[in-house]
Amino acid sequence: MMKIGILATGITPDELLNQYGTYADMFVELFAQVEADFKYEVFDVRDGVFPITPQQCEGWVITGSKFNVDENRDWMDKLKQLILEVNEAGRPILGICFGHQIIAEAFGGKVEAYEGGWGVGLHSYSLIGDNGFISGNEDQFAISAMHRYQVTEKPEAARVFAESDFCKYAGLQYGDNILTLQAHPEFNLSYETDLVSLRKGAVIPDEVADAGLAMLRAEAAATDSVKVAGWMSAFMSASLVKN
Image (cartoon, rainbow, N blue to C red):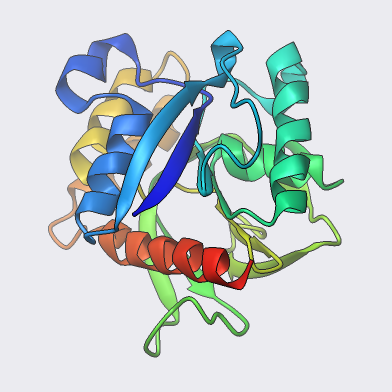
C-alpha cells in the first residue's frame, strides 16, 4: 500500500463542507473509485503543518485553494521549497488547480490572472504527446474547472500533455514523477454545480456562471473524473517503481 501525503492548501466553502467534505476527502473518495491501493495523511500547509521530510510519504497530492499564488504567503514559499525537495527525492507529486500553479512557479514558470477571465463548469481538454500513463487510444477528457488564474509561461522542465483553447497549459508533466492539472478531477458534477451557484455574482460574473451552469445541467453532461483518477493512480504507482 502506497502512503499518499495530501498537502491541503484550501478547504471546501463552509456552506458546502458538511455535504461534500474537504478537498482532501474528495481525493480519498475519488481514488477509492479506481481501487487505488493508497493510504493517506493530510497536512494542512495553510496552517503551517508540513511533513518533516519529503520522504515521509511515498507520494504527494497538492490540492486546490481559494488563495492565489501571487499572494506570496509564507506557507507558499515553504511549499515551493518542499516541492523541489520532493522532486529531488524522486517521489511522485500530483498538483491540482492551485497545486498545478504553484508547482509551475516552483520550477520557474509564470502564473497570472488570465485575460480571458474565469473558467468554470465542465471543460474539455485535448491530450497531446506520448502519455505512457494513459492506456487505450484516448484523445480528450472533460472535468470540472474553477479558476481565474492559470499558467501563462510553462517551465522548461515541463511537458504539456493536455490543452484547450481556454487553457493552453492545462496539463503538465515533469519527468517521471510530477503530473499536474489545472482543472478538478476531484469535483463531481453536483459539487461543481453547487460551487458555481454559490459564487455566482459574488465572485464569478453572472454571465460566466450561467454559461457554466448550463454546461453542468445539460442532459449529456458527464465528467471523466474516474478515468482521470485511474491515469493519476497509474502515474503515481509507476513513478514510485521507477524512482
